[in-house]
Length: 175
Image (cartoon, rainbow, N blue to C red; front, side, top):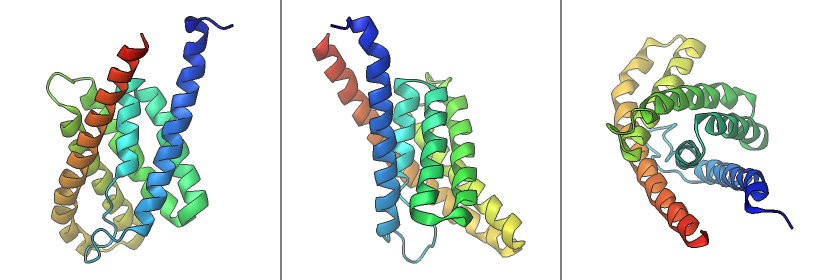
């Protein structure tokens, strides 16, 4: 029989696998939901909520590994290589921004960090779109993306906060 100390790495792997699976499911579900039909490219960012949970629960390194794995698998399974450029740029910049402000946790809540991550994700994607298309008119899209990043980032930050409260409560009950 394994001791609690020996079980910890196994539990961590199991939870990270679960979070990766949830992030992939959310990525797929978001492709099916036409949230903002009039504004192409805007999504809820639920997978980003899972990444935020991982960052708070385990740290930014684990969040980075799961985030990049999710982006790669999601592109292979659902969207293809072309979308990988956009998704990877958004995921990398949003994780970098969230990681920086996560360390200043006393100033920003998970909701604030979610908002910053959502906005960063959208700005990275518009930057990729600009470099791919060389269309200056895309810059008019930035205010819409900032507002949508704030709204969806706030929602994913709130989701992360609620899930983290449940995880901490369940952990206390186990101990």
